[in-house]
Image (cartoon, rainbow, N blue to C red; front, side, top):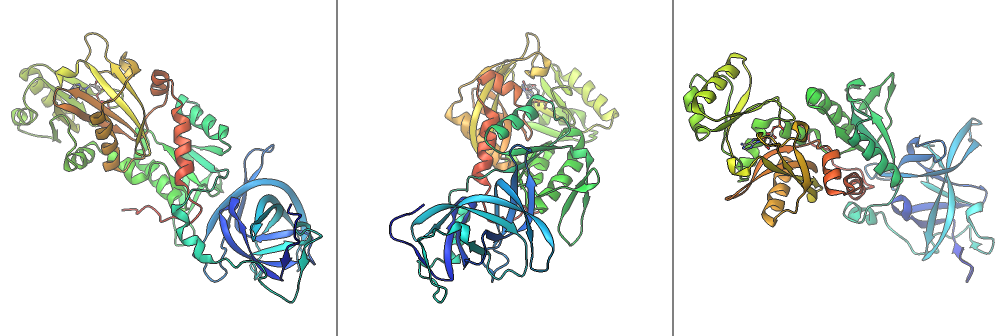
Length: 463
Ligand code: ADP
């Protein structure tokens, strides 16, 4: 509390509530009221009973509804308040720091959503020092601020606040989910597990909603999608809907779609001149020999496009085997690709884990003897890897081209430099954390903290 020269206040003044991401807000000084109030909308409590939080939206400029700031703060109290029309309602009380003319002091604010409030904020008696001088006939005795301050806000340092995060997964108890939950909670956020398949949606011109077990879900600051390959399409639709509600998606549906469609991913990477093993795609080609020749001739690797964990990846060492395999895949009407076999990789590959365009960890996976697939699920062993500058650059570039902020980029090392094998949009944390000893989950949550800005964002384009 300031105690030097008494502060002089008129009946209206500009304040800063920086911890809420509100650098300028006009308040009515109301000594007739005890408590201070903030006019908010979409007031949604969240978090555990022992540490409740509340998330809300503030439109600081009464003349500009498009200026909307997302805030959250710990709940310090709940108060029953009788409104002017005699109705009793429960209001959340938060504590924050107010600043006027270089003085800052802690204040409590009740959150109310009375549309009739002409001032976004009321400063009541409890927040005013007895020594301060209030002149009810004057206004703006303290420095005037301006709503212009908000214009540069998205580019400035993000506001540190508790985030409400949804973890979109069908496997809440797997290692990656548990680690993300742990990392978010350790950093003071609230993370809720949402089962992708149980979400249903109302799509209409009114506000977007995601429904779950009979109720509309609240608004989230961010969604971390961990969408399994079997429900990619539906998972992407759910994610787009979350994006429509204003949630930040780490990764976006579009980026996940680009990486899951192996043909599209290869085309995008090739267009960006990212080195890859020579790859031939086919649906049901009559010209088996031609297809194998396009991939450089035997030995070649054949991959079913639906393959994960190396299951549909086969090595054809001779031309004859390659032809038989292509014919067999064709008989099954399967989508597959034929790829140059990079023998010099020696059954090893590199997994670079990207978070927000940085490599935050890398491991080398070595296949078992007699096996060329280094997948850990196929008996491969992992060790930490130190990447060359070229490897780091190509991994970052591959993730960027697909628009992925979180990615596992698999590389093969060749004498001609690194080649990208695959870019995974939901990379597992277990192998990489075990191999590197790094807290990758914490890096992911830290990244979220830096990209979530208080001002409403441009939504991801749906197309
Ligand atoms: P999946 O997505 O099913 O894991 P990948 O394309 O990643 O399939 O292949 C599995 C493993 O097989 C890779 O990690 C790599 O060790 C090996 N591999 C894949 N393609 C090639 C190739 N063209 N040359 C050499 N080894 C390869």
